[in-house]
Image (cartoon, rainbow, N blue to C red; front, side, top):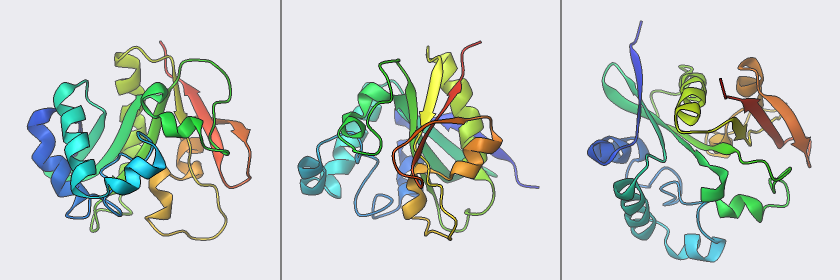
Length: 188
């Protein structure tokens, strides 16, 4: 059985993050900037600029998410931070705020090829709950896909609804049947 460890992304773990994201910055030069900047800025920064922005963000702290390791090898990533750090969510027709409660978001996942199908998303969601609580969150929110047909790994970058359901998240809004907004209370 493989040993899975999950750690916050700190500056000393940047090379591991690069390894998980690969030469393309996960998908299309994203480097997990998709929800952080306006679409025009995101597109203009695709690749090296987005990477530099995210590296600066990691250097400034606090950690913006979690890295999963399988037997010591960097394998997966989840962005976990206050929703306020992700302003593009607010401009989304489907994912705009449900209410004015302060929530943390688990907004993105990326699992390296070769490590997919090993329940790393579940492990990251479990650890994200603790990570958010340790950093003052009372509620964790997610924006997964809920679809009957199989989707590509690229499409599922926000997660899979069934994973969140199994871990006790509940749908609080669904402006489209395939894109629920799900929450779980994480406060003690």
